[in-house]
Length: 552
Image 1: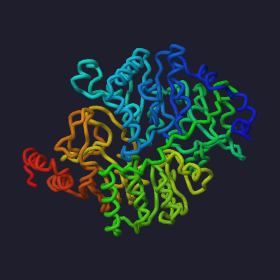
Image 2: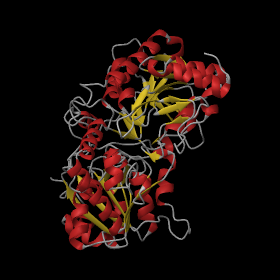
Image 3: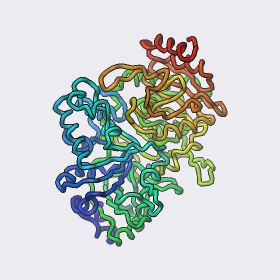
Image 4: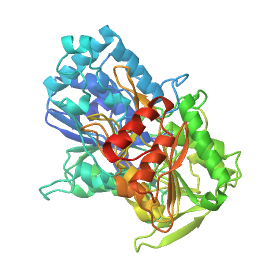
């Protein structure tokens, strides 16, 4: 049977073609929310912009935690719509490196830049507004501030959508996203949106449907939409999505019968979906950026050289290429331990299947840590297009895909081993993992929650490329005396310089590893400079003296 034939009659009667569903759900003045990350409703976003233009719709608010592709809604036709993330060859290994490169190349071409700006202006004219907790290259691109752009597009130069009145960035910790993104401040409703759009699997033989490769906020948001009684639900049913379970206290499935009420109330529409699951290209890790590869090598070498610190701990890896490269290299190391992570990628699953990861744990509602041998806990997964990763997740009893509000909590990371990426750090211990200058660039995600959890007896590696380039092409040091004015702050000094139960924190650049925990400011500054890019060390040494009278 195909996906639709497996639906019970009360749901089968709600199946319509996509445009018929959009006619019911998408209208001027509507407020929409949608599924997170790899459970993004790709078919919905691939069609939405043309639908808006054809119906001449306006005043639409779209709440989407993280866009996975450069949909026409976001970039118009300045960039060809992408079925998934494009080839990453020679683009580095950041999870979104290839998408970022494609959009940067578009922005660099005058004709394409004109088309992109025209699209932004139409979004503004139609009052199409986004609310996002996390940004990707699909919506974080900064228009360069140069002579050409200042002359032709002065209103846009040096800005991205988050500083242009089109996208409102919501700075939120990952576990708080379900409430924060759909919260009704009046308290009169459970959800402050008119419609929720998501993708799920068809029902299994037990009548259960799964959120597939990502729970995040999806399970909780759907439950709120059902209970709210007013929120419309647009459900794409995709047979290709892996059927995954969660922890019993935080499931990734729902009984199809829970959808009976909204179906009978006439506020549920179902569309058969055949879109591919959002995925990285097959060669995503074949052409690593040299700096990222060096950082990953430093992390793994340090783990190998200090088994007294790292053996047996629960491994966590954040979204981003450097951490994933490090996990890939751990396969050939002597490390073994456990896993507890927000993102599950192919290399952590490989460590599990090799027996190098023995299991995981879960924090129950009473705050007790349950040991889960032979299982692995996460809140979303991201694989490559044709590597079979998503098939391995399908009906895999070892994988527990639970809500971010239950997975990404500080106490779950106590005594763990974290590998995470940051964008910048200063002499005060302020860490930026969120912005580029004044422009929001990614999101807080789980960074602060995880780091503060690791602050109790854990080991944390903060991976930082020692330099970065501005949109205008200027190279700058990622280690600075002070973060640039307006830069969002993800972590503050006490998150790094303090320690509890002998927690150990290390800053890792392509130039080495420096311990930064339990440091007074003078020692902290010296540690930072020791792994800074050599071209900037003299400048940083002078600043250390000028600003803090610290000699290096």
